[in-house]
Image (cartoon, rainbow, N blue to C red):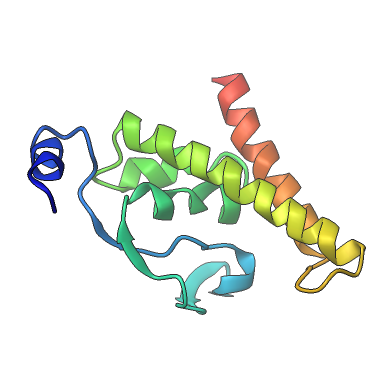
Length: 131
C-alpha cells in the first residue's frame, strides 16, 4: 500500500481492510429454523471495508432488525453504518434490476429477486426517513 494509504488508515479516514463477502443476499445464504447457518457462492470474496458485510442487515434481516444487529457488532460506528446503508441501497437496486431482467426473460435475470430488492430498499429508506 502506498504511504498515503497507510497514513489514511492510521488516521482512520479509511476503514481497516479484512475479508468481505459483498453479495450477501437471500440467494447466497442458508437459513435453518430462522438462524443464518451458512453462506454459499464465495466467488466474490475480497479484502475491503466491513460495511460491505454490514449492508446485509437491510438485505437479509426483517424490518427493524438492523439497529439490533449493529448494536451487537462491536466495530459498527456511525460512519461505517452510513457506508453500509449506501451499499445496501445499491445492492437493493441491483436485486431489483436482476428481477426486472428475469421478468423480461433476459439471460442471467432472476424474476423472484425483484421483490427481495424492493423489500430491502423499503427497509433502508424507512430507517432513513423515520429516524
